[in-house]
Structures are given as C-alpha cells and as structure tokens.
Image (cartoon, rainbow, N blue to C red; front, top):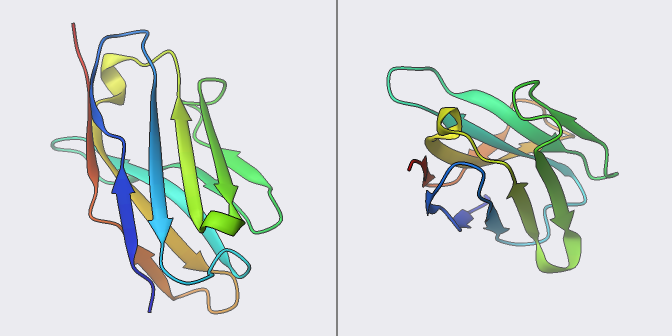
Length: 118
C-alpha cells in the first residue's frame, strides 16, 4: 500500500512557474514509475509526464519543453517543475505511482489545483 501526498498547486499568471511535489510513503521509487496526470473540467484525465526508476522521462506534447519531471529517491518524492504556464494548463494535477513489477497496481494522490489566469 502506497500513500501519495501532493502539494504546490495554486494560482499563477500566464508565463509564470509552479513546482508541484508528491511525497510517497515508504521507499517505492526503486520499483515504481512515477507520473503526473491532470484533469480539466469536462475533460478526461491525461498523462502529463512520467519518470521511471532509472530516470527515463516521457512528456505529453503539450507540455514538452515547458515542464520537467524529476524524482528524489532519498526523499521518496517526485516533482513537476512547470514553467511558461498557459491558461490551458489549468487543471487538477494528480500524482500517480505505477508498479514496474505488477503493471496493474497503481496509486493516486488527492490532487492539487493549478489555475493559470490573469
């Protein structure tokens, strides 16, 4: 069982930056793929970025070049650095932990609101 706690969301103007954090219980980063998803009103949840235990990353085309996902295994924490934010980035952002050993096992954070507006 894994518990994920997210923080760092808030209101920011277009062009601004935010850093989201997701702290996980236990030492899961050695065996879990960590990801950030987002869900805007009226839309389905979509993958924003993911990072494997080995450090490989993957990004949605809409955020590539603007967002950076990283992980600190010693702190059991994954981050999402968001730069050059756009109003289209407004959504609830969710942290996800996906077992690399048991592919059907995954956990979700509670979500944190990111609002990009003037």
